[in-house]
Length: 223
Image 1 (cartoon, one colour):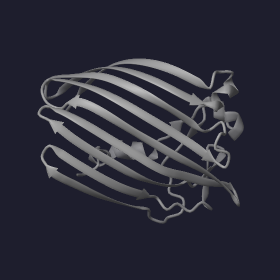
Image 2 (cartoon, rainbow, N blue to C red):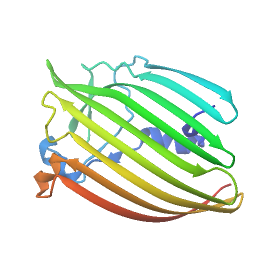
Image 3 (cartoon, one colour):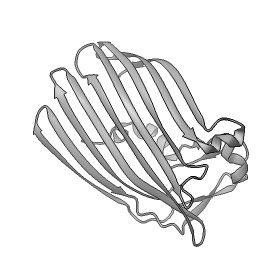
C-alpha cells in the first residue's frame, strides 16, 4: 500500500516536508536559542540514500503479521545552519513488528518498535539514544460506531549516561469512540491518560514524574 502521507495533495505534502516544529521551551537555553525554538525535521544534508525493507504474512483474512527494518544511513559529520543554530544529521535505525487478529467486526492490533538514533555534536562525541515503544489496541472496525481501547508503553535511554535527564519512560491509555453516520463525516471523542517520568522536567522546577489527562472532541469531513 502507498503510505498515507504520499496520498496528500502536492501542496500539502510540500508544506509537510518543508514545515517546522516547535521544540520544548526548557531546551532553548541549552541550545542558546530564543523561545519559541523551532526546527525542520526533514532537511537533506548528506545526499546519500537510506533504505528500509518489510515482509508481511497473512495466513488468513483474519490474521496478519509484519516486520520492517529501517535505516536512514545518515552521515554524522554533516550539519546545516537553521534559525541561528546548527542542526546535526541524526542516524536513525529500528525494527518494527506488527500483528492483527480479527474477531468478526472486532480486531486486536499490536505493534512493537526497537531502535537507536544518534548524532555527533562534537567530533568524537557521539550521543546515542535507544528507544522502545509498543501498543495493544482492541477496536471495532465496522459499523457507524467504532469504539477502541489502546494501551501504550514507551521508553528512551540516552548513552553515555543512561540515567541522564533526557531519558524517559512511561505508559498511556486511550479510550476513543468514533461515530460515522455517513461516509463523509466522522465524529470522535477521546480520553487520553499518560503517566511518564523524565528528569529534564526538574530544570523547570517540576516533578520528574507527571500524569496527564486529555479530553478531545473532533470532527472530520472527507471530500
